[in-house]
Image (cartoon, rainbow, N blue to C red; front, side, top):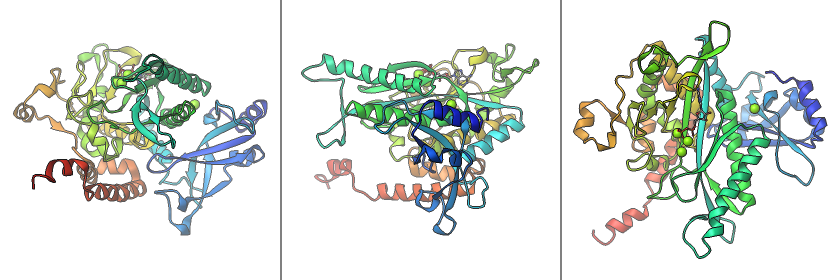
Length: 447
Ligand code: ADP
Ligand code: MG
Ligand code: MG
Ligand code: MG
Ligand code: MG
């Protein structure tokens, strides 16, 4: 941590901060927060703020419910919109148990554990996410619909501009929180958008993704719209992904950080580390899919016909495989993992992908040859012949694969794994036992 307690106190005073939000994430990636008047800031910075862990999903039972929030001083940031009662700042926290030790059920604490493993191997993971989302209208009661603002309709012109305007406001708010925005653009789908921010180390990026979603939702609401990170809100339109661009950096000869994926003389100008890391991602993709694609709905995005991956392969050319290596070399050399969606808990998603990649590096796995032809155009037999496997086709299959992958389980730790599995099995059963519209449409009249 570079920022000290005194620096935070001073900045809060200079900015006239009146309230502090202490934020943390539950096992499913939902952001929780406790708001305190600024008089409690020093106590909060000392990690003395307690909360009832038993009321947070996936945390603890009543008997062990006293938990502490330990803020990461680096995450101190002003909330960039007006509040009637004066400026509000936030801090992102690690959760500690009643024994005052880091709580293994805290996704942020868990990610730090895996980051340490990478550090022990001499690596820092850098991550740049591409978060896609839809902007939908709300109905008269304020409930979200799946109507987009930018299509059809009588007064086309101004609604078309609407999405751009909202996105600009999002960019301004994000910049106000210290984000380095690289691009923001309209995506393929009507009403679909993407805002890209600069890569950072894994922990900072996981924090950034959480903040990003919070800001995007809030700004959309100000315009009377609903921003959704649901992976596939509308059948027949593209889904929303969260491509995870990742690379390992290491200390170079002069002590400066260099990209360990880049090798001027390597095959494809990639290092052995990069190739093995890619192989690790491919080897564990079926195992980590339940974490990177955690909803019943996630699997409706992972189908042929859009830009979402279905097959487990890598490529340095086309966009159909699971892992794409963009042409950029040097410091920007990276692997783009294309299956994750923005409904994932970013702390867990980065923990499992990093662990998978590191496993490849440790075991010196070989990713095989890149698939530079479009896999969607292959027949099932051709794919089988080439040994190209598919991602799980639904949440249930993904959970079975997670259950069978000890390495990915170890990347979650027992506590998170157990709670996640328990809740997701229930979610699947709930879905599985419902009668869906499709069944009525296809069966009711015929049988
Ligand atoms: P795409 O071509 O897939 O649309 P984008 O330009 O939208 O890619 O996003 C690329 C992301 O990769 C950005 O977040 C960028 O900061 C990030 N990035 C660049 N270099 C690296 C690197 N070495 N490691 C990880 N991420 C990186
Ligand atoms: Mg920061
Ligand atoms: Mg992009
Ligand atoms: Mg995109
Ligand atoms: Mg991309």
